Image 1: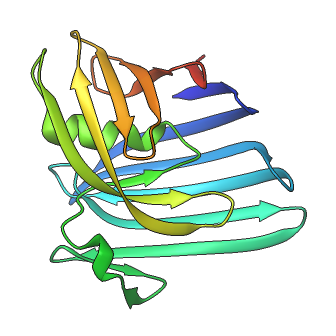
Image 2 (image 1 turned 180 degrees about the vertical axis):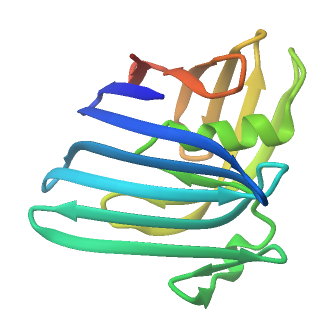
Amino acid sequence: MVWAGSKPAGVERCVVSRTASGWLLEGSLVRRFGAGPAAVTYLVETDPGWATKGVHVEQVILGERRSLQIEVKESRWYVQGREDGRLRGCADVDLGASPATNTLPIRRTRPGVGSRVELTAAWVRFPALAVEPLRQSYERKGERLYVYRSASGFRSEIEVDAFGLVRRYGDYWQAL
């Protein structure tokens, strides 16, 4: 999938592939964060049921390279090698700069039309690469239409394809 972003302008590419142990999202994006243009690459590994098992992010802003490593073992989340108890019980990672990871809870929970699921995700904030728990919900309004809400007050409509990959994320991202 390739998306064009508008708030702020950017572009993202993501390839989703099935592996022997689940699914892999491999992507890259270029967009502006406060300090300047950024290049981000990511790998998100899930189990067969779409629960996050591992995340690796590389980010370059104004020549400064930073990385983030997350591992999930038996519902325990390790960020940069240290357990983060605030994330215990999370099943999904939410890369805040990307529409790709909204696919994870949609595929994992598969809510029926007219139903709403509530969850807490491990939210990766950019450009800080800070990780924190964030309450979220996905309300399925139609066959391929969801309303996403977060505890921060953010709300957006999400349209997906038949597989569950995001096609449109509000006014922010649109598949090309």
